[in-house]
Image 1 (cartoon, rainbow, N blue to C red):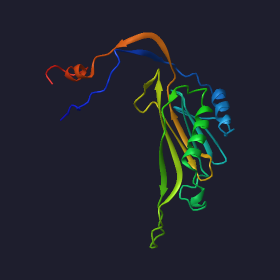
Image 2: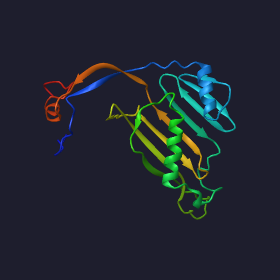
Image 3: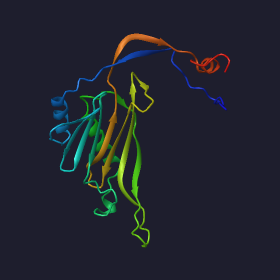
Image 4: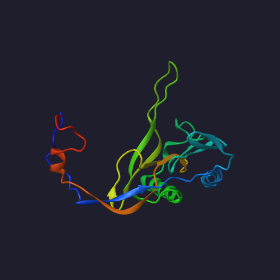
Length: 205
């Protein structure tokens, strides 16, 4: 059952139309990009990814879009080799994450919305032993983006940067598709009218 909300969102009378840009990744382009992220290694091609691995670090570039994922094997996911007081402050984590996104400006040029922070926590227990206290091992900075001042929704426009106790980027991902404005406008309908006549719904439903 669908319940209409008491307050409907304000919808602009028209929205700009954007066309997605097909990526032009080549193995050499991907290798140079991975090297800038700290992984200077030969490319391995696994459809649909370019993958680079070196010294426990990995950069994966999604060939069908402008998306990238970074992971580092040295990340202390259980918080056993670092002290709790080494967890970065929120401000320090956001500053480091913002810089990481700037380093991706070649493939990502949207307007990030104010990030939301979360904690990555670990709980371990030896077989038959007592459960150890929950430990915060990293701060995760989560981003959504805006385009032409409008927030973007869906899994194709988001980023997350995990800052560990080392203060470095331990893992991160950016899901993104570059686009260009076509100059066209898409006429919208007021929210109330859209609810009365939802697009794609069969009139008998």
